Each structure stands twice: as C-alpha cells, then as structure tokens.
Image 1 (cartoon, one colour):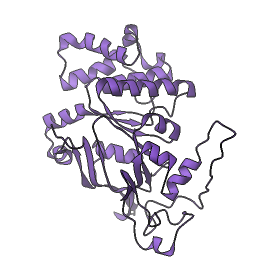
Image 2 (cartoon, helix red, strand yellow):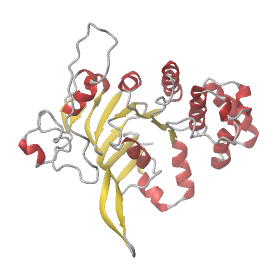
Image 3 (cartoon, helix red, strand yellow):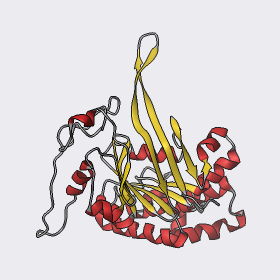
Image 4 (cartoon, rainbow, N blue to C red):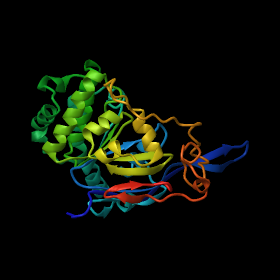
Length: 328
C-alpha cells in the first residue's frame, strides 16, 4: 500500500469532438473542453467538495476519474498505481479490482435503480459480478448492508417504486457499499431530495465515512451541504480548477473572484448578518471556444488587460490554499 495520496489526477483532460455532418461525410470543426488539465490529490479519509456552475465539468471530471468515460489525456493514480494504464490494458481482473475500490452514488435515485429488480437483486448483483462474497453468505451480507444504511430486512424484497426518494437514495448508497469500496464519488446525492430528508442522507454519509474509513469526492451546487460534509473544496470554472483549499479557509476567506461570487450567493438565515454581494456580468462563455488567458476574465469584476493574454497557474498562496488568479 502506498504512503502517498489515495487519489491523484495529473493534467487530466476530456475533450468532446464537435462534428459537422455534411451530405457525404462528417468533419470535426472543434472540441468541447469539458475538463482541461486538472490536477489535484486526495488523502485517505478526506472528503473533497467539487463546486461550480452547471456545465463547468464537475460530473465529467468525476466520470473520467472512474473511467466511465475515457480521458483524452492525462493520468489518474489510485494508491500510487496508474489506473489509466490498467483500464487501457483491458485486463478484466485488474479492472474489477479497481471497480470494487472506486464506486459512484448517482444523483437521481429514481433513474439509477432498475425498476424490474428487487432491492435484493440490485445489491446482490455486485456479489455475482465480483465474487468477493461466498454465495452462502449473500443473504447475511445483504441484510448487513441494508442495516448500515438504515433500512430493514423486509425492504430487501420490495421494488424501487415502493420506496420514498430518501429510501431509494439509501438503496443507491447500499449498492455502492456492497463491494467494500475505499473511494466513492457522490454526484449531487441530495439535490433531488426534499430538504427534510437531505440532512438525514448527509449525516448517513458522514457516519459511514467514519465507520468504514471511506474517502469521498462530493459534487454539489448546494454550498451549505459542502460546508457541512467536506474537509476541502475545489472550485471549477469552464473545465478548470480555479481555487482549492480547506473548507473553512475557502468559505471564510475566498481569494478567487469567482469563488467570492459563489460564496456571496449563499443565503444566511440571520437578518442581522450582512453579506457582501457580487454580481456576474454576461453569460458563461462557450466551452467550445473558451476565452484566452484567464477563462473568467470576461466576467471578472477585477480583470486587468493582461488577464486575457496569459493563463494563470494554480499557485499556493497560503498553506494548502491554491488559487489561479493574476490578481491574488
């Protein structure tokens, strides 16, 4: 086992070709730069929040890390091993071992479960594929997994449509836990749930993290849930990470203008608290033809002429607080 970071991405890139269809043939006329040279590390046991506007590349980055979509270039290391090479090798045994270690909790508990299968079928599918649980122990392991997520034994023989949204998300969490993973991507796991249920699922995730020594990549638009569950936060804009730091530093002392605008949009339930408000000018630029230099300069309230010429590097400004901005 490596003593280094549990997960590391190095210059990870995912471009989608833009194809123009003609009468006779098709030709590529551009690329969508969904993820553009993203590098970061995650330690074992931490929860890294990934935030940003819709379309900034959060889910694409997560799926590229898991190799659910193949990266255009760059590398992903898990426990010091270059898993990009393992997926490229097509070695089924090694790939299944990686799949067991790295799991995903989907955003929509209504669409992510097979409506024709019972809960028992959904969870024991992992046992059939990975063969890490003897068949004689399937039932006991199934019931143990359901108990972990707060479900009862009789729930195992019901279908997804018989559950509430919060219960379905618990089933999705149980499915991820069925293979004893070390790293889980939580792709907006509470965004489709009622507010009253969100805290229950967040508390469950926090409890499971401590009990099972899990590491989370937590994707969300809801900054209040990020503050509640994450230890560090990465802010994305147009396919790039523009700020990365400890959750308290980033929420209390954001440095990048885009992060300040995001934090200023958070509503605080106290009429006596004055918050500084920023507004964004214009629309989000196209990922097909992003602005030159700093991608945020077309909307930035403190942009300078040179911001459009040179792309800022992600620099460590204070301890463990990284920012990509010329003006910081």
